[in-house]
Length: 118
Image (cartoon, rainbow, N blue to C red; front, top):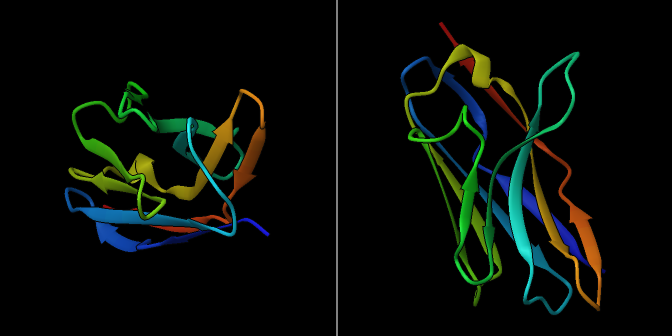
């Protein structure tokens, strides 16, 4: 049974930093995309940043220049270093692991709260 477990969330003042981690277990992975999404109250879930197994990264405009996504393929882990945090970064952050080619899979973590106060 595949599991994605997020850690590292919490509370921080605006301008501060947090590092989120996601660990995938219970399966064999490769040729896939790991990503961070977030969802604030009353808003749709949105992509924050993603990284392919080959290391290609993609960032939302809101994250570009402040957040850094990275993954360790051997450990099946995904990190998100968040710097210069803003109040509007407050949300539940979700880890996602998906592969669009056979064998297709799509897994989500349970989510972790990040709160940025002014």
